[in-house]
Image 1 (spheres, rainbow, N blue to C red):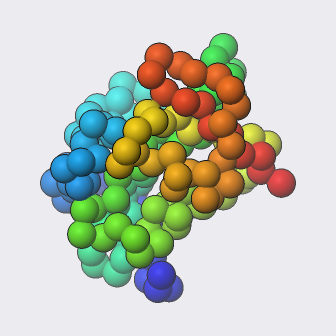
Image 2 (image 1 turned 135 degrees about the horizontal axis):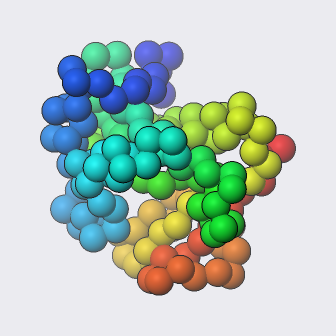
Image 3 (image 1 turned 180 degrees about the horizontal axis):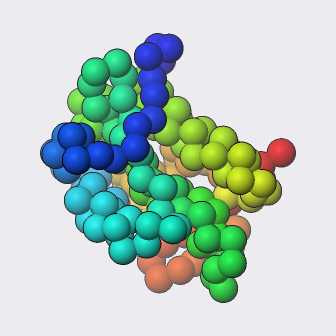
Length: 152
């Protein structure tokens, strides 16, 4: 990872680059396309926190946090809603940077716990999230495992 990594808010100037971002074909069943995520963010602007991941001038990923401390669903109060890292940019620390950035924002907002949901399966993100310290809570929502990490 280089020191040129940064998160950037979605703007009219970069929304096209965000929507063109594609994960590996075998991962497409595990994460929604960025355009879908941006539609969700537009529908929930007070909750969603969508950001591009940049390495210098290059768009390498997209991450969306969700912050709704009053949600009746505990798993939706604070966490990672989406993570898409460009197919040719995976394995370089961009996903870790994106997740750590959302967790830093959660801490800044005074949160003590963050969640992520994933669909289990080959090519899915489970091992990635486990390596970053998330642990399954034992809860399953639909076909997704709920993972959590405590923010100390």
